[in-house]
Amino acid sequence: MIAEQNQPRIWTIIWVFGVYLLLSLLFQIVSIVWDVTTGNDFLDMTVTWHSELFGLTAMLIALIFAKWQRIRFFRWERISWKGFVFAFIVMIAAIGISSVIDYLGQNFTSYTNTQNEILLDDVYSQASWLLSFLSIVIIAPFVEEIIFRGFLMQQLFRNRLWLGWIVSSLLFCAAHVPTDWVSFLLYLIPGIALGGVLYKTRRLELTIFAHFLNNFIAFIWT
Image (cartoon, rainbow, N blue to C red):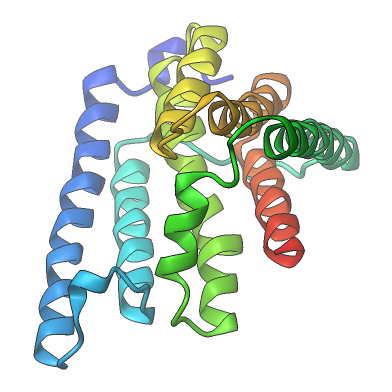
């Protein structure tokens, strides 16, 4: 871990994250203007190449600001194979538990699917397979892990990582808009698993890998 005196101030972390939010908003406006000028209906919420690339660009620029402010999300040291195995096992276990909960919910309650999945089906209904894959399997895990396990857990709660684990898991779940206890658990469990990977390994790279794995399995399964 970085010595306390060399760590960025909390307010520095907050304003850098604010830069990301501002850039995301600005690029979203640009994306809407793009759709309007090209005759597309931006109200249908269909994902496009430019909307995904703008979102990724906002995060990459924020990472440049973070590096400038000496906020370290990643380390150059090689990750051991044990780290990858640990992240793999934790994520597979989380997927297994979630699958059981999904089965029980569909067979013994009125639950059929999460609102987030229904929204994603609509958003990606017109998208190509390649765009859907890059967006769901590559871009989304990268951006979400930097937000929830990077800015939030790793940085803001760096001195109370266990508390950051709890908060990031709950906010990760809330961000996916659960509407019942089944969908709440379906998003809380992977959030806990991803936080556990960071808590144990201290490597954000491994939480991104685990999130990639989760989304890849969900992508090919559906």
